[in-house]
Amino acid sequence: MGKNFLMGNQVLARAASDAGAKMMFGYPITPASEILETWIKIAGENEQLRYLQTEDEMAAGFATIGACLAGVPAFTATSGPGNVLMQDAFSMAEALRVPTVAMIMQRGGLSTSTVIYSQEEVRLTCFGGNGEGFRIVYSTSNLQELYDYTLKAFQSAWQYRFPTFILADGYQGKMKGEVEFKGEGLEIEAQPILKPGVNLRNCYNLEEEIGEIISQYSDEYQRVREKIEEFEEYQLEGAKTIIIAHGIVAAAVKSAVDRLRKEGQSVGLFRPITLRPFPVKGAKKVLEKAEKIIVIESALGQLSELFKTEFYWINVPLVEINKPAVGFTPEEIYGTITQLS
Amino acid sequence: MEPLLSFPKCYKKESKPHKFCPGCGHPIVLKMLGQVIDELGIQEKSVFLVDIGCSLLAWDFYDLPTSQTHHGRTVPVAAGFKMADPKKIVIAYVGDGGAYAIGLQHTITSCLRNDPVTTIVVNNTLYAMTGGQMAPTTVENEKTTTSPAGKKEEEFRTLHGPELLTGIAHPRAYLARGTTDKPLVLKQYLKKAIETQLAGHFSLVESLSACPLNWQTDAQKTIERMKALEAFYQLGEIKK
Image (cartoon, rainbow over all chains, first blue to last red; front, side, top):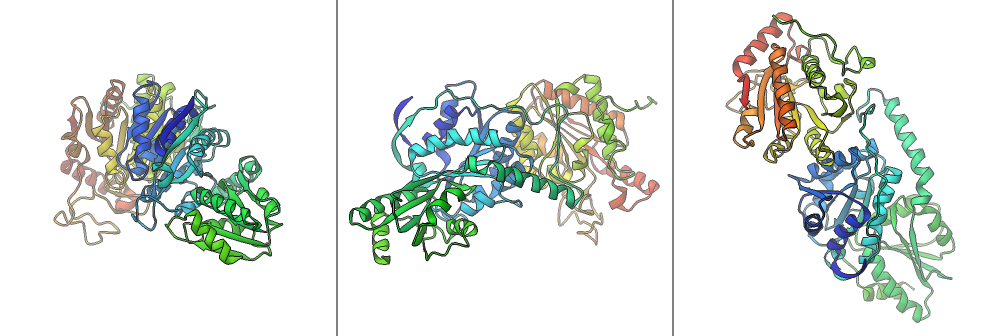
């Protein structure tokens, strides 16, 4: 309890412990490694917590599945190329409705790339795998949210039984700041999934068999999505220009919006917190009143793709500001928006 | 000769007859494992995890909590399950492709960690489910769909799984290779493997096994080929 001055990755490990997670399986990768290191430190002081440094990310993902099948809340953390390898496991988690939790600290894409920052793993985290993206993805924006949404991620995963992700980045993972811990001692209602009488499979004989299962999952996903969807509205009252941004870019947008508002510009921010499911209902209410929409992201349109899929019908000018794998400063956003208006 | 026992009690009767091809060795391995589970009285606390490949057909073979995993990933699922529920007996059932090709790093690392899980590898020297392609276990001059001229040891040496692990295994780990030709001997190995897990150590049992469909062999030739394999691969308790 109380306030703590910590690095983002340390916050995540502590949050998982407070959330009621019991096990972590991980393979070191920059910029996520301190999550495993911190968890190991915490586990050293609590005999209920366990960990395993696996031989690779595939093993980390699948061992997380194994623990969840036994009814023990477990998680993993990775980034970039590790996220690519873990899609093998996440697609199985999606197929068998295994409530894995994974913290994805985005680094640069393509390939091995840079090791600190990008928003290039949106598509992979939301839709990676040979499936339909029956996943819950929370995109955090600051250190306190790393803590708060990790608490929520474990609850959502076990309540809805969709693989759940904290999508952050190396900036959030490596920065230090003050965070309030308020969830100590939470419990997750976790029951064994693989128990007597249960035979699970992910390989089917007939197209119709798996087709029915996908449709059933889709119906369930659509039924619960409104309970899961989250978004943040910032300075949207009467805003004619609405900026859509997620994650740490949204934090920079907020500073820019403050300055623009002071100068009398009618600008606000709509920030999807859940990228999967995309907060359609919340966005509709806001975006219908917009005269201009600006999507800003550190990727080539991965966020705007999510937005456009749901709002292909909206008759409002759209500007996309993309800096693939490169961060934004508030000053830069301020300058760009000023130029546009 | 001691007669083979009838249907093990831990079988899931609704899923019989089983889904394997006529002449396949899998059902012999599974029957021996079923008898071991019965004899040790561990049905209530066993969990069965199956790989992708022909082993996936065993997903509802026993009246045991059972799950298919992904190709080569059964061992890490087993390791995670065992960590989460150490009182369970966790059995990973995989083919030679899953254990020695796509999942070899997991087999080796599980052995290095001395995970108290039991891995059973059914070795029919090729990828059977996908139509008979070359595996690390394919033997000299064996023709497969991806080694149509016959596999050459000079170009690709043959992997001997349990032997590979002997150098890294914990002193109390158990490694053996049996054959479906001698099911009661195989059964002894399986029993010792489970007992090794109960004692808290890693165990792996490989069984040589026939695939008449992909070998394109009749009964006589299948028997001959099994004899040849038994002469090539070392049978017995490789580490006890």
